Image 1: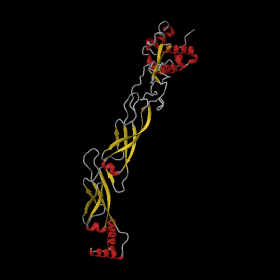
Image 2: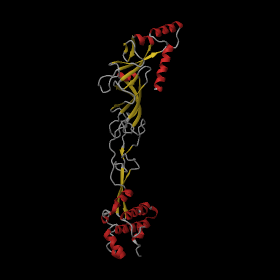
Image 3: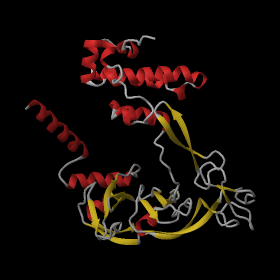
Image 4: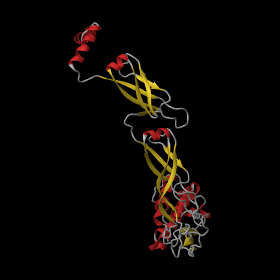
Length: 376
């Protein structure tokens, strides 16, 4: 039977580049590989052999040049190296190894070793003052732990897991398969033990054979002074139990600080507003202001203006890194009375007159300055 033209076999033109030839071969190799055609392996094997033979010649510049000049006569008896010798006859074969990996896998044995347990996250809400000065407390943490009934084996007390007879305890099964390229060894996860390498004939009644149970534990934690919303605390080794003897995961506590009705935080400083009457602001006074540690005395000098900020040093929040402490900033808010008696109004009029102006005069003078500014 006459051989088909190699370019026709791969479905490319005679002007095809090396990359186009390689691409065409890979596509056809996937399509006609015997393993991909279990219902018609014989025909697929013949087709696959024809494709591989065409590719071996056309992927080699020297062989391709001879084939272009003399046709199949240039390769008869020498062009194709055959399938019987495994992969040696193909050399690198332009990336054919990628095709083998696709169909057969790497063939390597994957052993499942110890794995660290999963980390656990807990969100914790605390007060403004607790965030400032820190605290110790017990929190409830749900997590996966080793089953105490079976000690993590998954087997009922008095029994123990047995090595899987199907895979010999390896968790994987290897088997050889004949292909046009020789015998290929494949490795797959054992279906009987699901890769664990052991069989539990009588599962533990507590964990049902998993070796782990879910419990809620009380964990004692220390929250340092200076934390804020978004601070994340790590408690090593308080996460979930590891697999196959692996270490426990970690516990991460995410802090959320409740808003305070008086104080507001700016960095490590505490900010608050204090109301003052017109008389206190004008004549001065000594008042008590709340702080995180109780009341403190604050002297208000006479003539204090609305919005003036006073600083109480060292009354703020400790630095989380231990570098000192912030201040408390007290912002003055002068409150204008909304209800006055006639006597109070008269006293204010007299006050204005003693200053050389009247309320009406002040208003007229202000608008005159605005007008002059616009008129130039």
